Image (tube, rainbow, N blue to C red; front, side, top):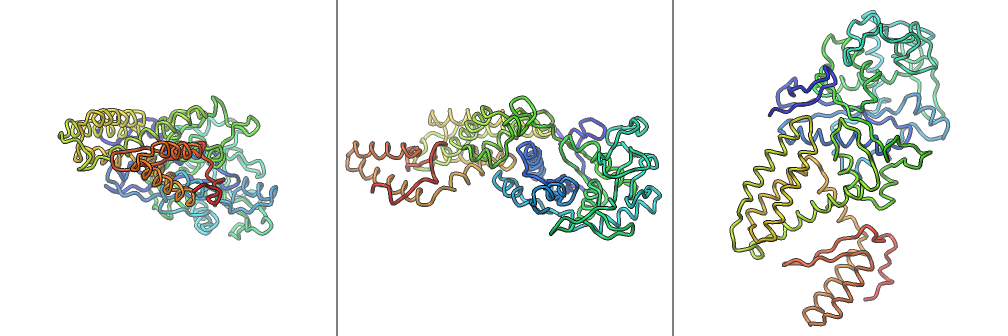
Length: 488
């Protein structure tokens, strides 16, 4: 089956064919940095990360641009009210790193590309598609026949007074038009929020920013444009119109949009006490790998209901994958059964066919995860029955690595397991060695006492044929560990 995506443009499943074979140019609507991103925002960003990964997994070279909107009305209003600066994206990228998202090729800030935005307005002006009102420049949608093509919208169907911009501060000739350049803007103390232009001082409109930066880095025709469903109208409709009006070309061939996230069956709200950020969940003991897994576990075009119970189930799922990988890694030439592996190649081939069939059809994660856990079940059974030798284990490990190159949860879990208090890690290793010596000395009471001591600290031991491994329970108190207070 060829790779297919549900294209908002046309509302159908389309076979993916990039403009240049083997290359994908993808634009992602990035954060507007007026407040810390919440898990609803990251549901979309994590899905886009998986899309990027699967494209590369499928053999494409990907160039991705994700903008940072560091100047718009909401950002400026927040800066005025709270005294914060406009450039507050550090917390966003901190959370991005915590959740294991890949670094994209370009993260342009809007404030660094205003000249390109002014030039785009000039081109639209030369084409006769704009007008000025009170120092602001507007796109006249009635003058561009292609307006609304993304969602098959007839501009005449917009009711009088229905704004496509949603900005009450700027008057218009026609309330359906949208602003390209906002005159009469002012700087915020300590921050530049106004630029000179041929039409006087002001700042660019939000829709304009994405068009200018996308075309600067990716050219006049993109392969994929992504965002949340809330971006479709008016943002992407307006972005498409102004871009195609200046180039005469189709702006993006595939428009992909993720559905909203629900929390406890409803809208996330601070007043309801169900407003979650990545940091707030981690503070409650959630592992980033479990957050990532849960946000990826439902198809991107369906609403995902986020609950703490669902997060606990995601933790168990990631742990099951992680423990299976560790069991496979324990299979060595010395510890493996003398029997040859039976069925490993068939199991991997079946996984590969089912995984790709599901993912090739608009990133069908349910089928992909189902196929992967079928492989886990079959692999665990083979391990229990001594039917897996080194070559078989390596085959399945390779399949797990290919799975994780797309989902990115196992590598994140391994990073979490390594990121512990170094004093605690040294103390645990010392106690494990003391327990091993006690067992050699056949002092089993002392060995059991050490295991109990570790368990009270939230540290679980797991004895294998070749070593003793340890892991942290979720209730382990790492920050409170004081090595000087521990008994030797």
